[in-house]
Image (cartoon, rainbow, N blue to C red; front, side):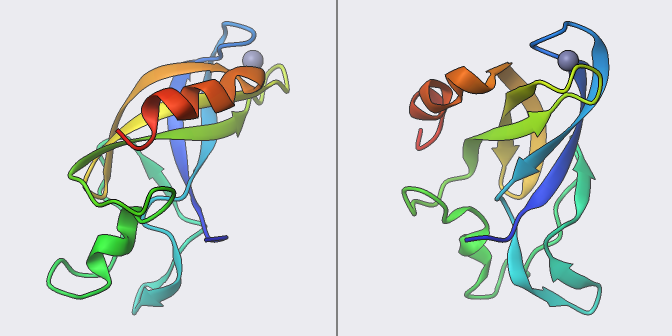
Length: 124
Ligand SMILES: [Zn+2]
């Protein structure tokens, strides 16, 4: 799935420690399809903001998280890559989702540790 969205995360950069706004990539609720408001991709969301997606009563709804293992769950975690606008470091934030809503950042770190974070958090 090549489509993605962005999460605007106010947090301290794991590399430089400065408070910043990370624009992290998420594959949740992303698709080249869309509705009358536009495609379900390239959109920016803040924590607590439900992402635009197919209605719950449609066959496409469960696809909001069919990335990776293809499983469907109510609570999921995704390791979202980002680049710090202050120090230019590649970092990641682990975001907890409840259905199509990103809730909070539960962990973060440097790009070199992203695969380990994915192993730990994704598919839980
Ligand atoms: Zn930084």
